[in-house]
Image (tube, rainbow, N blue to C red; front, side, top):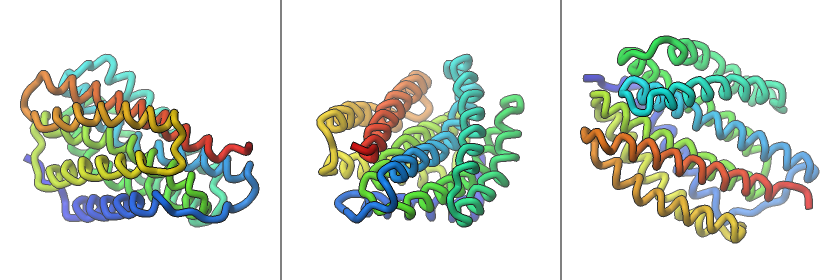
Length: 275
């Protein structure tokens, strides 16, 4: 039995509050662009990239748990290795781009957490390793999210907020699946249960908000509708903890939602591109 630490609980509540606030701010707020169109396009690309780091922080723990539980272990191993490699590469790219001292400081904080996190992720899979990753992943998510927020603050374009919120949905898809697999591996805590409930509520609310965004193209609306159908199935499957067949359902549906939201995020990113 594992209880989340007080600091972990505080981090989870902070992240939930910040992300919920982003959903409110993300839709229906306009504003003048900052810099040239090319600069805005570059910024959108790095907001997308930094947002993907949030997702990878959760995906790494999810893949680790899938290996430990024997849920498509060969595929999960490839997912884990790929996610660790991609996180490291994108961290280096973000450091090279970092346009302000605040962003450079935030990335330094990411690096401090990423080092020990990566060491555990690359070590042999054990239940204790899953526990230690879970203890660290909130810190990595918090640090990664701060980078996204600082990048978004550089732009007043609505598309930047849409890239952020849409990218956040990728993270939530992996976060919910991760929390489910931790429960399947026997971890229990009030923090875990609260995080799951919050993630489900936040995903549903953000999906509705994105579907109502006036900037949506027909292609974006179509992709969001597909995600909404997958979400209905995924949300239902999350209720069946302790029933082995649903592990595959959760793994498959979370991947489908991730893929769909990744496509949507790229579409929002292209709204920045110079016409």
